[in-house]
Length: 218
Image 1 (cartoon, rainbow, N blue to C red):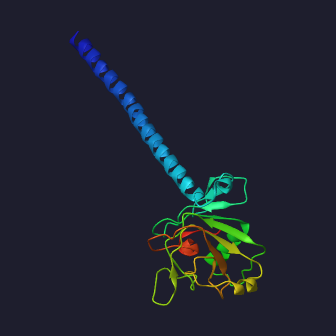
Image 2: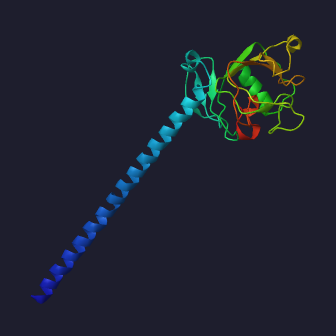
Image 3: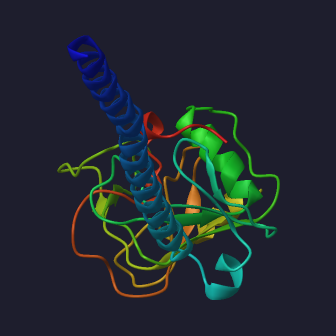
């Protein structure tokens, strides 16, 4: 009788242990699921914030149909319009999102890969309506202000490419004149800067916000 009672007791303990063991993975799995859901929600919120920042570079009508990519080339929002918008480059201090048409995307690839044979195949227009936080007006690859690199901080602006760069000879490179000026004259990356508002107040970006080391060519 004692042996039988002990057997019953042992079986009861084993049953409880087995039941407990079966429950633990479920509890753990539930916690992992909650954490995964939370992480997904946070990632989604961050993505949406990045998309909003990128689209803020363009007028509403263009932003509405634009595609948004991050600086690794991942599509964050697929659009059916003519523009691709990017958030502020990771290496840039401050804010400087931009929206580029196909001509500017080709320019971007040439600039990032230091291609010297770039020539615009048509008029290109890019938007940086959040402005930038500084770039040399003479050196396409300068990363900070020096005594002789004509550093300029721009407010909201558009940028224009033309196929015949000789047409830009009639436009000044003086960015203090309050109107359009030519940036990076004498280089394959020359373009027109067209101010559309007040200048930014800090330092570090521009069309050169397209940091070569921070981005993947599209």
